[in-house]
Amino acid sequence: MKKLHLFFKPCLAALLLYSSMPMLAAEKPQGSNPYAKWEHGPGQDPNFFPIAVWLQSPSKAEQYRKAGINTYVGLWKGPSEEQLATLKKAGMKLICHQNSVGLQHLDDPTIIGWMHGDEPDNAQSLPQGKGYGPPIPPAKIVEGYGKVRAADPSRPVLLNMGQGVAWDNYIGRGVRRNHPEDYPEYMKGADIVSFDIYPAVHDSKEIAGNLWYVPKGVERLVNWSKGEKVVWNCLECTHISNVAKKATPRQLRAEAWMSLIHGSRGLIYFVHQFKPVFREAALLDDPEMLQAATELNHQIASLAPVLNSPPLAAKATVDSSNAEVPIATMIKAHSGATYLFAAAMRDGKTNAKFALPGIAGAQTISVIGENRELKAKDGVFTDDFAAWDVHLYKMR
Image 1 (cartoon, rainbow, N blue to C red):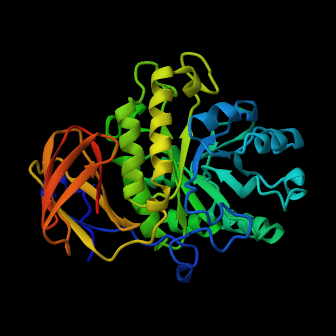
Image 2: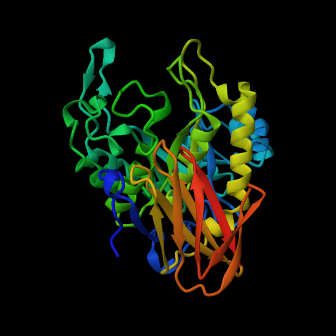
């Protein structure tokens, strides 16, 4: 059954039917593990779910490990031997550029992937301050991807793209603004495709506060790739360049779970702050947000076997009492339990009525992390959602 697209017609979304997300394996016969085809990729451990941090100093790896981060994406002028040794000591995985040092470590399990550029879809700065030129053509990205793969086919290649993935009218794409057809072509140049958009701190009225642009971009990548690429995405947790605003812990959690529900298989924290002063690791200097991110990361890690489990053919239905606040869902089964992950997709309150098919009789539903239970009859139950609420349900 085709999913209704809540992004463009929220007023018609009182009844939303969401199937489980499509399989994102690089080769579909390999089951639910999207990394099975790469000998030295993220691996086949069902307890591992990639939770990464973007372009940070390896000297902070132990602090990030304690916060539930398990992967570094990008290294400043790296990798170097010293950087690799520091990350290995901290038990941190790494996706980095394929330089001469990296190629000397092809048997090193620390490196689980290669980076292949950042935001090539945006207008590119010209030398000597002469403004901006067009984006890098997709064909050039595909050509570069071939070279990286030829040097080491045992690891996936990650490409991170910009806001245009979720926002067609993004001016930062220059002459390719309002050309979403570019993205399926860019995706031919990577195995793992990520993107970034930060609605909580955005300066555009169209995007600011509309957290659903994050899962919108995830869903577009999944659809553009027809489920044949692994999709990751970035999360905001600092002021970045907005001195007046930053994401709240609730907004961070909403962006993360909305992304997972819509098919993301890896999360990347963007932790830099540029204004009012530059701080490379602003998350580590923010006790409230650091605690929230740590709790979120540990919860996701505890549910990694569920998130990594095969998709279900069963469908859940949800009836939202407030048509302006649709509820997105994902249903999974693991170790004899059924899981339903649900997120409110707008800044408003609603009551949701869920129906899970094929479940008869009375059930007790645990709400994970909330120390409460609900009662269901024949797979039907209700729950309240505040703005950007996320509820994770488990029933035997």
